Image 1 (cartoon, rainbow, N blue to C red):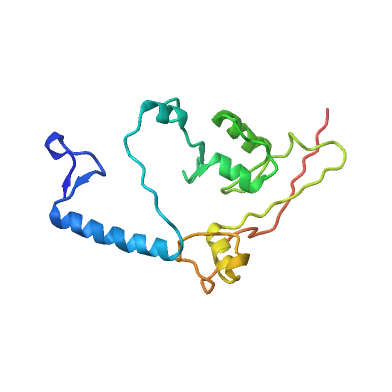
Image 2 (image 1 turned 90 degrees about the horizontal axis):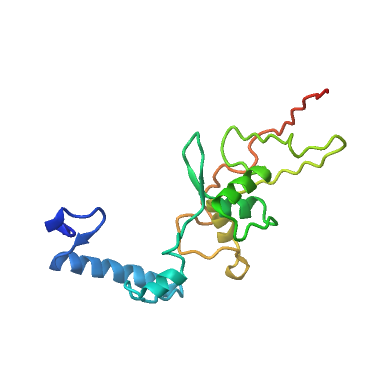
Length: 187
């Protein structure tokens, strides 16, 4: 196995395989393929080289992007659209630009990292207000819960078997008290 194309200095993540390396790769692919087929997943093969019209139609040539947000404290990266869909499923965010998605996250009061605080002064009204807290679970806990259900009642479908019905749940959701701090505003 050598970096590809080695004669030009190589390229990170790309390798040329010799006869034994290719044989090992084939065996590994066959193992993976058979586990997928046993679980009723089937593969398709498409060419890796396509005419420009295909790449243009898919959006790759004109700026294909995954809208992400990054926590400024822990530097964790999240897909912005997924974050909004999980915490505000009724929000209409289709065809929003990354800038609009960022604004939607702020406007909807979506939080995903410590210190777990939201400033609601922009949306609070002088009279009464209705405050609703949505608790979002972790994906592994969803898998663990589904694993204990009959297959026809499960919400998730995955080939990941790391989290089974006997796995311990991970800490998630609302882990502490909710407090609302009020300030008096005088003109």
